[in-house]
Length: 113
Length: 111
Image (cartoon, rainbow over all chains, first blue to last red; front, side, top):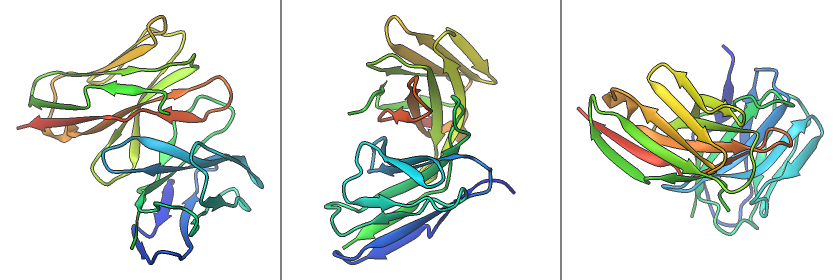
């Protein structure tokens, strides 16, 4: 089965702790993306990577960090510097260098108290 | 800021009726895409229309694009209860395939 997996589905953390969200894809896609979605809102781009070992900041990168050591994996760390981390986080991937559609994972709902 | 803005924000219709939602954007685009999101789930791609196209169909979906007005519409014909979801437009600019999403239209189809 080809697709994108995100784990866990629900994540709870105490304020001040860093937390890493997992995103894995077996679609052989070059580009991967992290979005944040707040209730009733659209998606905002946090970080994206078009190739291994390279990534760029999106519109709301402050308080987040990523790595892209393998083509299949693009983990997102929500650091304690992120002032309002509670949100729904979505990972996506696409074949790079084209206008192709993005394939989304099922999302991780992070709650920080 | 959001590139695309959907209108209306919410829509409630009876099963069998058509649902129309609009998307406006601000800058030039390479393509415009529509996605569906069921509550608490990831997004699913519905249809892509390129900047040199004016209309596209896929099953019960019809998308139009007017680049002079920087707007697009998504029509779902003969709606079903299963069409209940949020619908988002997303614009792709010429450089790479980074997308910018609008705020979405929440559609409720009542049986």
